[in-house]
Amino acid sequence: MYDFKIEAADKATLYADLASALEGLVAGESDGIANMANTTALIMETLPDLNWVGFYRNIGGELVLGPFQGRAACIRIPFGQGVCGVAAATRQVQRVEDVHAFPTHIACDSASNSEIVVPIMRDGELIAVLDLDSPSLARFDEEDEAGCVRLGEILSAAI
Ligand code: SME
Image (cartoon, rainbow, N blue to C red; front, side):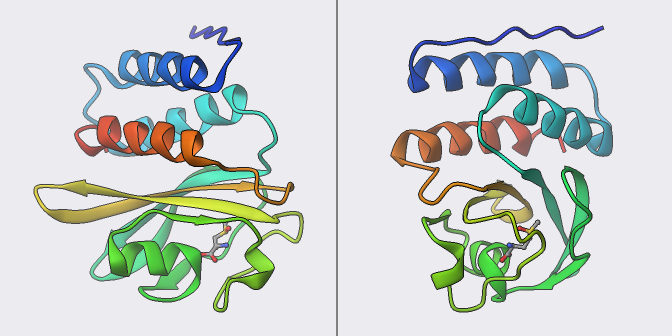
């Protein structure tokens, strides 16, 4: 049984504790699907104010839905389309305060109002993106971005 009780007073500590928990969770396990699945559970349990968290994997130059928590989502996203597709095409974090103002945003859950998508790279190649959605506008700030980038670095060798 895993029982991570992460209750940090400030966001930097919260993400540091989350990163440590994630490192422990994926340590010694080589199955990427298992590690992605557990990662989504850990993030959903730890970070407040999320309605969806999950992975899209780079399968032959197209994003394909991976393990997630939340409502059923669109399965395939072309590079360049939506917040995830732009993150995949540019290899840059996309932090969107209001998804309804993002030109090609793909609405999978009408509850989502803000979103952050982190590219996950390995050996210079994009392997997946990690997508977090919130029902609150501007839910993700620079500290969230730094924290999620750190999670992506840990996941690079684990998925
Ligand atoms: N909103 C995303 C699509 C994926 S869902 O949020 C789960 C996008 O625009 O890429």
